[in-house]
Length: 508
Image (tube, rainbow, N blue to C red; front, side, top):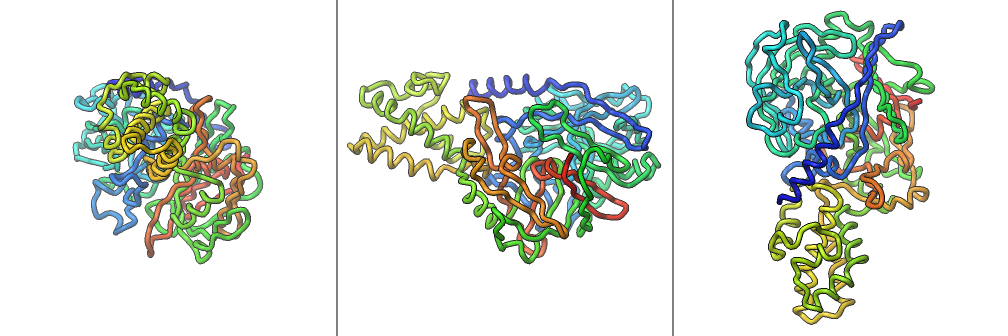
C-alpha cells in the first residue's frame, strides 16, 4: 500500500510543474488563450473517470433521461485525467491564477476553495480566497458535481474572471470545498471551465462563455480550438474566443447544425475502417465534440471492428502475456527450487517490495478490484507477476507440465479486463494499420494510425494505446460518438453559438 501511494506522490510532483501560459488580444479582435499540453502517461490514463463497472459512462451526458432533472448529477462522469490540454485563468481582484481544462462537455466553472480543509487534493492546488478579492460577492448556494470515480462539492460564489485579456464581470462559479478520493490528486489542472450550453449548467449558473457574449467582450459568438499534436513541440495549441485564426486550419470548414442543446451535439454518418463501411452508423449516429477528453468513444459494435482491424488487445491482458513470455520460466524454476513465493517478483526485478502483501490475496485484489487506480506501468507489471506466482503454484500442486501451465496462464491473461476498457496495440505495427474515417456533413474525416494511437509512458516500457473506447447509448439518443482530442487534434474545431453549429477543417 505504501509503495503504491509513494509512486502516486512521486507522479504528482512531476505533474505540478506548469510553464507560464501566453494570452493575447490581437488587432483582428480575436482573444487567444495559449494552451499547455503534457504527454499522456500510465498514471493519468488509469486514473481517468470510470464508473463502478469499469466502463466509460453515458451518465456523464445524461443520455438516459431528460436534461436538468437534477443539478447535482448532470455531469455524472468525465474522463478529465485523460485530457492533455490546459490553460490559465484568474479570478478576483487582484487576480488569483488557476490552471483549468477548457471543456466543451460541461458548462460550469469550478476551482478549489480556501475553505477546502478535508480533501488532500485541495492542498496540492491553488485555492480561491474570497477574502483576498475586492470584487467578490457572496452567493452561498450549495452545489455538487458527481463523477464515476469521485465528486466535487461546495458552494457558488461570484467574482470577476479573467480569460486571456478579457475580464468577465460578476461570474458565478463553484468554490469546491470537497474533492474526495484520489481522482483529483493526480490532476495537473486545478479546476474546469465549461464551454457547454446553459441547459446543462449545475445550479443554472450562466456559463462564462455566455457572459463573454452578453457583456460584449467578443465580436462574434464563436470560439475555436487548435490542438498541437506534434509531440516534439512544446506549444500545446490555442483556444480563440470571438472567431477563428486562419493560421490554424487549411481549406474550408464543414459545418453541421447542433441537434440537441446542452452538449455540442450533431448528426454523424458512417464510420469507415480501411475505406470499408462498418455499417452500424450508415443510417446515422449522433456525436458530441468534447475538448475535455482525449479519446474517441463509440458503439461497441464499431469499436470491436476497429480494434480487431488494428490488432488491439486488452492492456492488462497484453502486460500479463508479456510477463508470462519473458519471466514465466524463471518464475517456474524459482517455485520448483522452493524459493519463497512472496519474494520471487522482487528477485526478478518486477517488484520493489519483498512480499508486502499475502500472495494468496493477489487474485482478489487485482481481478475483483480491478477498478482501483494504478500507479504506473511498473506497478502493473508487479501485480501481474504476483498473480502469475499464485497461478503457477496452483498448477504445480496439480503436477501439471510446464507446457500446460503456460497454456493455462495465457488463457487466464485473456480473461483479465482492462481497468478502463482501453486496448493496446503493437507500437511496431502502425504502418500496417488501416485508416479510420468519420462522415460528418458531406465530408469524410480521416484519421491515420499515427493520429489515433496514443503513446503512454517512456521507453523501455512505452505502450501504444488505441484511441478508441466503447460507449453504448441506446436510441433515441444513440448510437452516439464522443469525438475528443484525438479527433479535434487532427481537425480544427469551431463552436458557433450564434448560428448553432459545429465546424471542422484540417488543422494546420
